Amino acid sequence: MLVIVSQTSYICQEPGWAKEPSGVQWTVEIMDLDILVQAVLLGLFNSSVYALVALGLTLIFGVMDIADFAQGALYMLGAYVAFYASQLLGLPYFLSLGLAGLGMAAIGVLNYLLVYRPLHRVGGATTFIAALGILLILENAAIFRFGADFRLLPSPFGHAKLALGGAVLTYHQVFTIGMTGLLLGAVWLFLQRTKMGKALRAMSQNRDAAALVGVEMHKVALLTFTLAAALAGIAGALVSPTRAFNPTIGGIIILKSFAIVIFGGMGSIKGALVGALIIGLTETLVAAFTAAQYSDLVAFGLMIAILLVRPQGLFGGGGRTA
Amino acid sequence: MSGCELLLEDVSVCYGRVPALQGISLRVGPGELIALLGANGAGKTTTLRAISGLLRPRSGRIRFGGGDLARLSPAAIVRLGIAHCPEGRQLFPEMTVLENLEMGAFTRDDPEIAADIERVYALFPRLRERRHQRAGNLSGGEQQMLAIGRALMSRPKLLLFDEPTMGLAPYLVDEVTEAIGQLHRQGISVLLVEQNVHVAFAVAERGYVLENGRIVLEGPIETLREDERVKRAYVGG
Image (cartoon, rainbow over all chains, first blue to last red):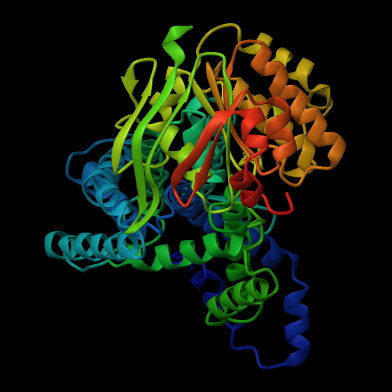
């Protein structure tokens, strides 16, 4: 009964309840604590994926003012790297996670060196159009090479599930949430404690000032692209055993992650994380208590509402934050 | 100290096709405090940005300690010993006072950074009290002090100041002016862009007057004070 193809489908596959017509019954369902806990846990899993991709996006935006939609393609390719590394090469899943991160970091660096860096001085919308171009090229190359069929990687944890009260998560979902926590913590430490991390924050807060204290823009940009691409690749690889994927998943995740970045405040790290949490939770809560079809409607509606009140985003502030 | 003479020779800078500097030449000798005067839009900020590498000159040479700066990155220019304290403070607003000062020492890797931070605190005791506050939350005067302190953290031989007293209350203008004079007495060369002529006249030794991207006048500060063109540049100033 618990075939989790997408996180929201589980709840509406519960027999009966999405179709329940009676208002009285409805209230009873809303009060159901198990469903609430289940929705929150799945929301946390959802948010994890968004957070990893949105964090990379917001870092790149902060440092370079580039809306790098190509990150979506790296997320998708990360899933394929994990898939082929473990299915064809027989590598352990955990190793293939690292491989996805490394491989995508390499592509991220190439994107920067070959495309964004030469275009950056031209300014305007050129980098954005180039980013869309890279996304489409990689997406179509993947369709050409891997086909458009959906695939699912067997989880190293099998189908084992963890019961938390009345709610259930697969071990793999728990693992994904935990790994995300670890990665976010590592990035946070890097940004707060290391010299290059501080340079990245400084550049994101004031590019001229960073140049004037001696930060080498090029190095920081290269580092930012490496980091963001690795995060996107690992995110794709992490999710590949949980959500069926095909070459088009990159476009979907990047649209949502970009919306989250705008919502949280372009360039703000805190904004990206809080935004990911709000959107991830909203999606599953709405799916749990109304219907899955409404989850995007409510999530994006909420975003528009907040942007109407705070056009600079939740943590956009005066200057950019990081 | 002969290694830290700044020499601009026939420097031109354009924004697209609009000329901002049209062949200016100026000199800041070792240990000198030079004022760069002129009306808004005369090219003062452009001059400083060209020296610190934020803008590329279209032609001419900018020499410091013998080498040409024109092809160097801002980071390389900081390493040579030029610090630019830019217009509008340009701090890192989400970082603390202490982190901003540490960023000022970004090019350094020596064990004396902590001692230099103490030196900045001694110059501006208010910064010590506020060291764990976000720079964005400081008052205008404190932000200016932090901007100066951050510039000092690279241990510059030459300091470029762009309107350091702009928007400050009179008693803070005096405090900042005093600090600039003190740094000058410690042997740091200074190129000061200042709209407040009283400040410029109080501390500078020589000055240059810019008009429409050209230097129209130069000389000891006393002679500039009496000149009609200077008065014209600062109508009401």
